[in-house]
Length: 179
Image 1: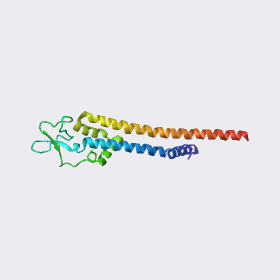
Image 2 (image 1 turned 90 degrees about the vertical axis):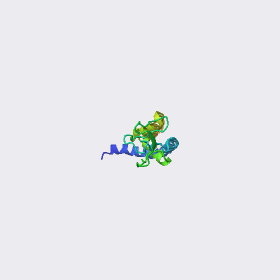
Image 3 (image 1 turned 90 degrees about the horizontal axis):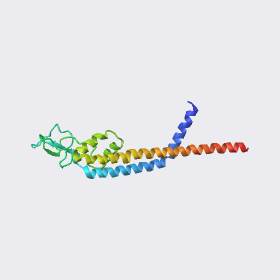
């Protein structure tokens, strides 16, 4: 193993160690924003993602796989299945806004950008295109802003460490020249 490369690794590890308190502050801020968005989603869409289109005699319409809306916003059921009601016969997904815990899981899925477009489509079927604002704000506030905060903390800590080493090297050079 070349010693030149190990010096760089040592710098990176010490940078992570020195920036840990600031990174914990950013993590706390991220969790706080996730909780705010989870509570907002819980208030707006609790129980709404389980609605499916049914025919008037109560039979679930297999063509309507996505959620539907009983209001004026969102997806309206086709003429063959006119009733939009909660479908208890199907297993419920974990990613929903029924509880704050499930909402936190859904927000975490959106924040990590893990096939979050599917969740956006489900919520958009329920409440229309206005729900896109929620997901865009969530992505901008947490995903992009948090990544930039973490990178700024790491780069500033690395820069401070680098400048500190250069000052130490120049101090050693001055001390040798004096002797």
